[in-house]
Image 1 (spheres, rainbow, N blue to C red):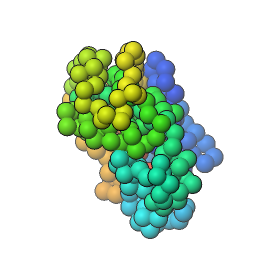
Image 2: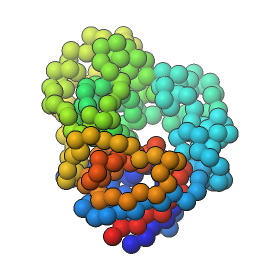
Image 3: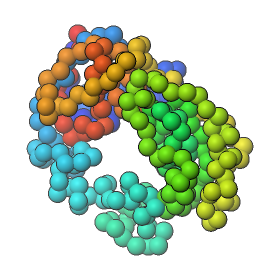
Length: 264
């Protein structure tokens, strides 16, 4: 089977295991059905996710000019504490920013390679955890806007990481931890204006990824350096495809790359 289109992050459905989909303009592919099959990936061209033009991708699937202009790439996305819509203050597009920022947000703990703190819109639970390859996660607070979530994350980063080791996550060198215990321990470090939003009675969410075989070591596929690759798909975790030779392909970091995908 042959598929062709511009890469966007894989869509997911939580289940046991999680179901993964590549969605193109005119087609979609359930990648779980491609496990243990040979896959060919060929880079064809660039296609900016914002303007649709064939321009080199700069960051997050956007060409350089779009990255610095589109509200979808505002700095508050990566740094929630910089959100200003609650002050009626515009960054790039106030209407868009209000729609995104002024809705319930979750601050959470997730265990992908180690315990980390993160922020996501409530509507993105558990999708955000799946995208990070977390095998367990728990909510700490639920707040009404992105700014409050951001300042909570900043405060908790003093005590727990906000980064994931993608190599450890993909080789499955992880250990189970008690996230309820971690949540309770971090309660005292939550900013005063957020303490009323603390969640005290929830339990961990566990996630099951479709992986047949974890690699001992991983090497990342770079389409700029290797525009054509063939390998047998052995697993999907986070936003990564895992192949039999230890090659891993981060679909999300290749957004805006127009590719051909063949499955044998």
